[in-house]
Length: 291
Ligand code: SF4
Ligand code: SF4
Image 1 (cartoon, rainbow, N blue to C red):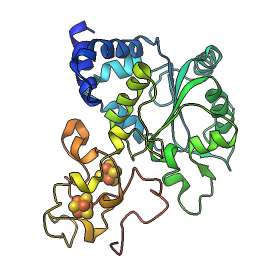
Image 2 (cartoon, helix red, strand yellow):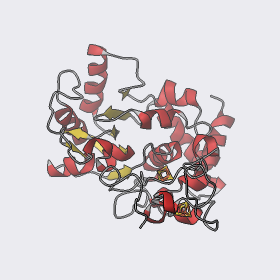
Image 3 (cartoon, helix red, strand yellow):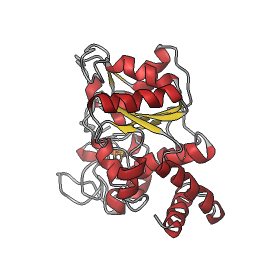
Image 4 (cartoon, protein in one colour):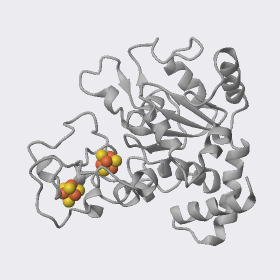
């Protein structure tokens, strides 16, 4: 990739973190580190739908798709990597034995079904513990990894558990970051990874979410804030009567927009279902009756 393209990416990432353009070359070089694999990333998946990975692939123009799939394809990514079988195990085990990698985990830990999500015959929870030990930081992406999400919904026959709580219960202490969302915005994932490489762990809130992305309240950036209540789905207007979680949910997804800023849940006339909050999957998707 031409240097000019890396610089363009650096400028956009600097803006993402509210940093001046003077830092763009350094950030571009961090992206280059990701691209060349000098900063290894291991991406494991537990109980999940792989929607976070799909969202990651939509990160263009923050990072071009080719950069993600050819280079940031990390040391290993359970959905995107082409390696399978013994080759995949060798790559993962080789990375773990060298240490100094960022561990990204997508999906919850199925604590009651040891044979679910196995890797090379190893139960996911054992595999995760082994991978977490040598990691410089652990990033739980998506609602399922961050807080349990849909797999941990009431009933929870698989014993699905959020990743960081599971690691802490097992005595592992690392720099931990949660990037919730169902799915998370790709800028949240790429922006956080680059920040970890460049500057270390970004400022986090009490739930370990980067405040840059999870500070704003959905309600405060909503296009319908001053409009009358909608009373049926598809109507333009405040979606509160239809169960919107916007007043209690944090994330900059509405202002940022998914699909290169094209839209958001609210822009497409869907109430916010609170996918970045810890109780997502535990309570009703829609706040009926309205709070
Ligand atoms: S639609 Fe939701 S986020 Fe928007 S103004 Fe109404 S309650 Fe707030
Ligand atoms: S608007 Fe609400 S449900 Fe939609 S992505 Fe943002 S936090 Fe999640």
